[in-house]
Length: 177
Image (cartoon, rainbow, N blue to C red):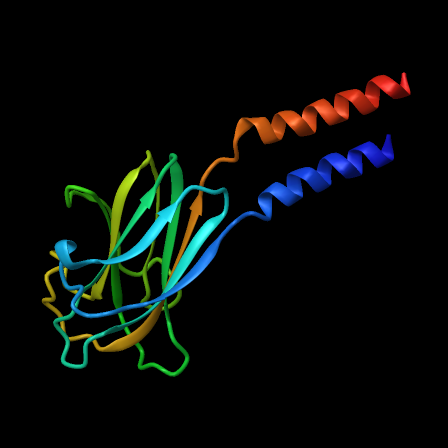
């Protein structure tokens, strides 16, 4: 039985190990939803991406990122200041494909940095990083700082993986009886 439990756990852990994390570097121009940097399409449990970005040297910059989830997901995104950067005060927004606001945050992360969380259906989404006071995400701020945007996409595992684990445990229990 112990061997079968270990095999079932290894199968589930192996499937979870298929998760993907990708690093991107912000590129200008990406100041609007229409010019957003495309950071990929995601469909696996535990998918994630990170972006090294910088709000412009003269302020007035907004950094937009476009991504797709092919299954419903919980999106967790957070802005962190880079150790070599000036202190910053970010504003982070999550937007639907039509530009409508899903959620916005000012200071729920460490210090004056932002984080958002939302449960969404499959589709195309946008994240935008801007400076404090730019509630319209049009660049109306004077912030200048480097940042790391970290995004986790909690996409549910296929039910079949859980089914394999349950079947393995049931078979092990049946043999024991």
